[in-house]
Length: 223
Image (cartoon, rainbow, N blue to C red; front, side, top):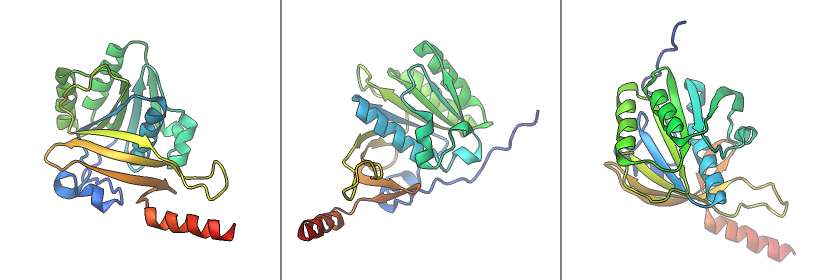
């Protein structure tokens, strides 16, 4: 069976110029491992949503694997981010060491484009092995550490913290687009930062606080 050709020259376009300026070369680093840390369940859900929005451009470029032993993503929810869940291979394992092994092996495979791994603990040595794997294969990895015991130093090129913020519903409950407070805590050869972002129709955009304030004023006047 012939392997699919590895996509080269691919650039992930977030549409967020201010955020992209934080990265080396002003482009989201592909062929690297990114680390996300969350503690509360709502933060884990927000983190998975943000990751899904990021990988939506990569899913159609090659095979995507989602590896975990306690999966926190509800696959049909991926449709909200423009991803057909059947395009992702979900691998559910019992033990964390098996999850880590599967992630590392997947990151070594140049037939894969993206790997998302959910686990809690990741040592520096383990993260170094993952980073060395993608330097050869050019696969992009996203490690979501839910409720780790310690936020230790890792070899991942970036560390993120994502928290949900209240959506604009315009008076109709359940109609708002997902919004996040996005913190880039560290990035190799780049500059950390913090942004408030909404994902609408598969596209990122910054939240215009003043615009929404004016909207609320108009609502109150009309009421």
